[in-house]
Image (cartoon, rainbow, N blue to C red):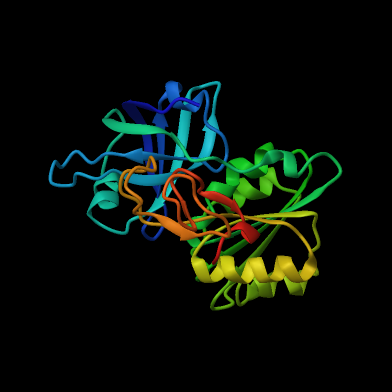
Length: 260
């Protein structure tokens, strides 16, 4: 899969929840080959911000050549993106990363997709492309949710957990899974480290394979700088130590292949 650096046309920017923005990009060169779980790097127009910002793909429309990104404003770069307008051009690089293994959930199998916070958006395209039965478990801080309607249209069942109990189960995603007595054949998950550790432990206890998409600060985004590594159970051929480059070898890993 070739990495492409090009200019993308912004077609829409909207705020979905407080500090959470959706951006649609017209970039057929990348959309035509992208798969769920991959990401692209966006370059700031402000030249003082040299490093690109990696953002996961939320939706992929290969027919129209468009990509949807959903991101949280976390610094100067993402704040710049949130203020951009339709019609503007932005430099992008992608598609990057390995994506989710769709073959792990064939017809007749049940998949549980578990997302927390800004780890929820990368699961939307996955929920559309899996051929088996899909249950989505989404964890939010409070009732200021996003993308629920899209997930309800794509999945067989959507379960919500909120930290304050304002909607759904009060607690985290594991609390919601246990409350709903959910069962599946494979798990796909994306979110903060503590959540992924909990999902991995639950999967091990239930003897269910868990695929996790790692969230990590990145510099180059192509595996050259070794700024985004996680500890692995085998030796990396590039660095000759027990680590994996999240941007290059991931961001998706089988949970038992890495330390969380």
